[in-house]
Image (cartoon, rainbow, N blue to C red; front, side):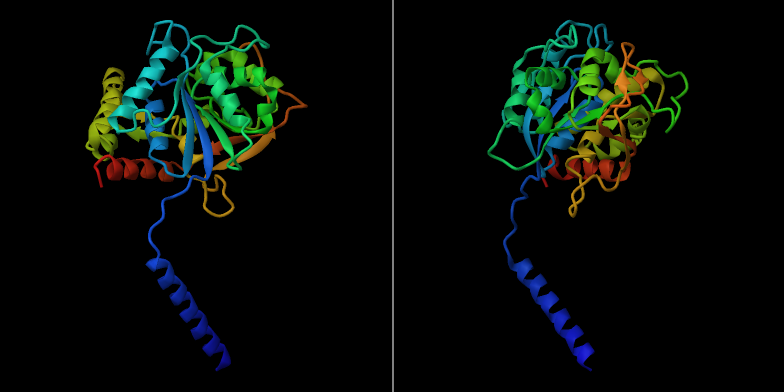
Length: 334
């Protein structure tokens, strides 16, 4: 009888607490982390999907958005001003969703590193250093990169102390052969690594920056179809149609109905971390020694390499369903 009474009392306490919580006015969600977004927004449109997803995620405090350069001669933009154009694409998308001027936007360098010791100066590099060296906040800082590593490498070369102040989340790098072999017809040097091999060498070979890497075998898991984009993104606001039109144009040229939104894991691994023991709990990674990047952008064994996270399985359900829900709710005005 005493046990039953205690259970009933415990239930009443739980119900009372729940009722009290229901009576509280709703509170605005407070960010759990700071984020600097760095991507080649003038190239593959997957970066624009990542950008809008981060912009619509209230758990992150976006401190800067950087448009970085493409490889010379890249088919998306063959001009020598690809970082400048990337900044313009950022501002165009932000205006579409009513966020023009809400966050500082920078153009990175229009070229990669010339050697392993000389940074490429830019306002973007200074923004990274300034945010990393702040002492007035305890919120962790993530620099999320979906393209080359020129800006974060330049920031490290300029001020090495930032290595203790941030986590770098990078979409890039080839497969690790002991995990999985490369896909058929693979490019010998992975796309984002090839944008600036010297910058990748600075980050992996010389720096002590904590790295969460999403290599090619992992980011290739982020497949969506044109049909689902047309149903779940295109109808919602000017931005929704704008984004899907870009994908449809490319798919029609290539004769495919699937596309890789390979930069979206940058949102999954930051904004969508678990509530308790906050981490990327629904995606799988292993800790391994950082490899050495050679002059071809390939891995070499580095017995003294620090431990880095290498992701090999991503929770694409959580990632895409959250993107679709935020597009539908916020861009439809609901």
